Structures are given as C-alpha cells and as structure tokens.
Length: 381
Image (cartoon, rainbow, N blue to C red; front, side, top):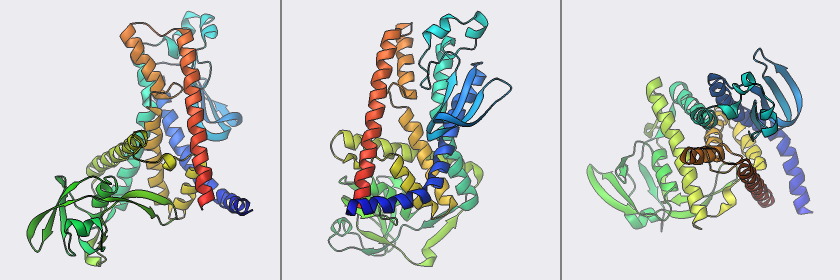
C-alpha cells in the first residue's frame, strides 16, 4: 500500500516534470539528428524523414528537398532516415536498392564512399558535444561563474582532511600539479577521486605546505533529495562574502572553458562506467527516462539556467553513449565501417543483420535495466 501511495505521489509529480523533460530531451535529440542531417545534405544524400520521436506522426510537412519533417507520439528519441534505409537504424534495404535507378542510387546513403558515410554517422554525436560547448560558453560569457575561493573554513573531526593535516584558513593551490582557482574546482577533483591518494599543496600563513589526502567514498544527498556517492575530504568552504566572486569571461575564453567542461563530463562518465565494469562502483546510478524526467523537473524548479545546464550535460551523455560500439547506435555503424576499411569491402548482409539484432537486444536490455533502476529509486523516495 505504501508503494502504491508513493507511485501515486510520483505520478502527480511526474506530470509537473513532463514539460521540462520534453524540453531537455527534444533539444538534445533535435541537435543530434540535425548533425546527421546537415552532413548528409553536404554529401548529397537524399533525406527521406527527419523525425522527433517515434511511432505515429502528430504533425509533419515536406520541405523543398522532399524531406518529411515530423513530430511523433513517442518522445524518447528521434531519427533521420536516408534513401536506401530499411528503418530508423539505417539498416540497408537491399531489395529497395536493387530497384533504384542510377540517379536514385547517387542519393542513397549506402552507395556513398566510406568516408562520407562515417562523416554522416559521427556528425550526430559531434553535434551533441558542440551544443554543450555552446550552452556552457553562453553561460560563462553572459551569466558568469559564481565561485568561492579555495579556502578551508573548517575541518570535520575524524575526516580524511584532518588525517591529512588540513587546518582552517588553508588555501588550496594545487592538486596533483593542477592549479586550483575555486572551491568548486577542488570539489570536482575530490569527488571523482574516492580512495585515491592526492598530492595537495596549500598556502598556510604565507608558506606552501605539501599534504597527502585520500578522499573517502561517502553517500550524500543533494538539494533535491537524490543520493549521490562521491569522494569527500571533510572540509567546509568559506562563508565570507569576500571570498565569493562572480566572474564573467570573454567569448573566446568561454568557448575554451565550455570545451573543458564538456571534456570533464565525458571523462567523468567514462570513469564511472569503468568503475562499474571493474566492480568498484554500483550500477544503480544509471537512470532511464523516469529518472531523467524527475531530475529535469527538479532542476527546472531552480530556474531556466539550471535547466540549460542540465541540457548541456545530457547532450554530452547522449553523444557519448551513441559512440559506444553497439550495433543500432552510431558507434556500431562506425565499428562496421572500420571493419569495412580494413577488409576493403562491406560486411555481408547476413553479418549486418545478425549484428543489428545483437545491438537491438543490448539496447533493449540496457533500457530495461535503467528503467528497473528508476523504479528502485522511486521506491526509496
């Protein structure tokens, strides 16, 4: 009965999360597919359909090039379908291609040179990365960064910081030879370095002191009540207004910082997945549509800028996942093209069919696992 009550309560919340969820996912999917579309047009590939969502069409129109732009009922992705595709996953339609005229085949995606096919495929994830860089750069330029100086205000008793020798008033200069300009930058390194020894230089009363600290992996709760596992030292930032700054950057610097931010999300995601594979981390942080909807609604309550920041992070994640070498995903196509480049000829139709079936099974299993995690997370609320 308690579970039913929780689900009913979440159902009400879900509808308040629906609009932010649709906004975030639609923006990310649109730019991903737009990347495929633009490069395909540059390569003179005939684009039959550009769809946001799957299933039956809600609304659509044909442009001058004959592409059907459509909005569909199931808003959990999208696709661009080229001439010669059998389905949304760009599986070649061998029968249809045999019946094409020479002129029609010139616009077929599958008759294009290997380099062009690879360029069209990788353009989707790259568009996701570029979208994230643009969003981050916009925020750094026009909103700025609210930063705290990396000054230790207090050290928790019995913490890793106390064991390492931190004192109140210490200003962190570097961690593992990386210069630290803000408390947030220090938190990032520490949170992703649980159980790893860090070499830290602090300024204490004008003297530089070398410390060695090992952040402890602990469960914490964010402002929305979500449980997060991360490395912690056990120090508190300064609360003095004099130690807070709002720093805006010029556009060029912002683009560079946006690129670094995007790189950080990529490396953090890969690090987490590596920890899961090696058994050092649980896979319960992997979420599906329900978790994304919940987080979107929570972040939206903090303001539009926070929602845009989430959009950038999700865009990086979607781009990265699509590069995994799993058939059905962009990375799977790139894997087949790499094999084709080595062999000097495409894989057989039967091999491709088997590969795509395996890929479909893997994608479905991942979706089921992520949704199961979402339901477990819902039960714990």
